[in-house]
Length: 560
Image (cartoon, rainbow, N blue to C red; front, side, top):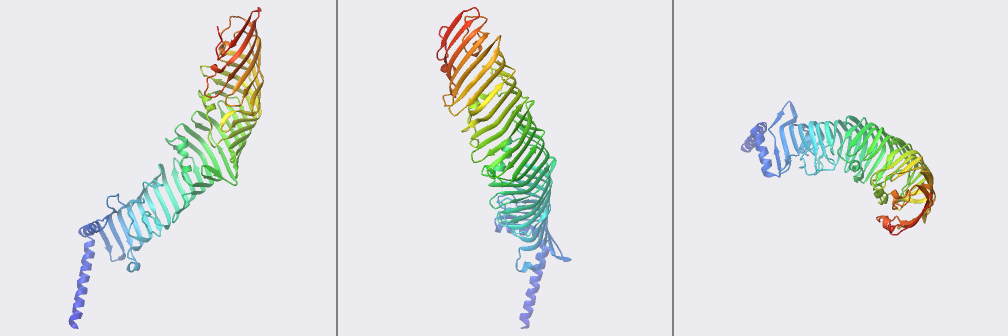
């Protein structure tokens, strides 16, 4: 028995000596390299550290220096200058669950492909770390990160775990290509749901504060978001810039406030933008709201060739309509004003009022092609209850047939200008007049037109203008069928006998003023040349009594 007792004591001594030797060796670089090599040879991971420090004055505290951990063949999940580990009695039952882990001066990659870390802790603390999450929906790169995760229970593909409270600050951060500094995030993770109870950052020379929730299906709910003095430049078009709003299943905005923002992108810009948006959800390419409201104003809004000065917009949203309470803006040296509502189910824009005043507007070179193109699927109908135009200058510089209206006034009632996604004058009454006009280098005075549109045709009840020493008057009709059959009856008294030469009729063997009468038909069908469809007769009597009568067939006058 004495021998057995001595043997046990000897074995205990040997074990203690070995443990002491191992303990001392682990605190040497040679011991650290041996452990690192053993892990690398026996697993699919790369793990290395330079040395381990432990002091009996703080027996539950272990420090590893210059640590690297990751899956073989992939970027390291963790690189840290120092890792401080606080141990407890829990290590006897859960050896890989510690009280606290402090990562200092390194990089933590939190992408789904990163190697799962083998430890858990009641608290993970970061000190002057870098965070990266490339190749994820949150393309994150952050530097000088400080903060913590409580508790820290990393899972495969989820370095921060499934459930935790989080708090981080970062000196600088780039999220999905957007840089920010002095970032603060506080919130919680609950499986696939992320709650950000406090967000703060300096971004684009301004500031951002707010709160938000990300739901399990990827939807977002913005509790509050405030952007102040933003100065943002991007190389994206406005459609690409706003595209992320449509990539999530839904985006609910309880409160969004933008103050004094300046945004600039490819062919678009906004300056001195103030915006307030409440209670609106964007989902499935549309919006949902019970009591939403948008108020917006800016010094300038530019989108391509469109340039608005001092635009003001106020819109109320409910289940089926968006009511445009106010839209005013200076545009093309004049003013435009509108009010009405958007009816979602009918895809209809119903304007109560539309006013143009004092414009100096040159039509786009391709305005005729735009007029013929179908409008987007979401816009089926546009109606205007009352349209007014005052003292406008409208110019078309098309070299084939330029025209200009000076001091153009007009009014229209209950006019439908879009039906089945197509521009036109589909119903209503309209009257236009100007102080002067030019049609293909022919000057006229006091031109005016009155028309009435129905489902079957557009009736021109009055068309007149003064030219030379006389007056032109006409009536006509344009069918609403795709052929757009057109008939015009024109009379002229004491007008230049060749006034029609610049408008498509061959020159006449007459001079001076005279009286004329023209009856002509044609087709204004889309994608069809006008001239071959023109047929008509012209009778002209000059002031000295000479008469000419000509007939046009397929746009040609025989012998002319």
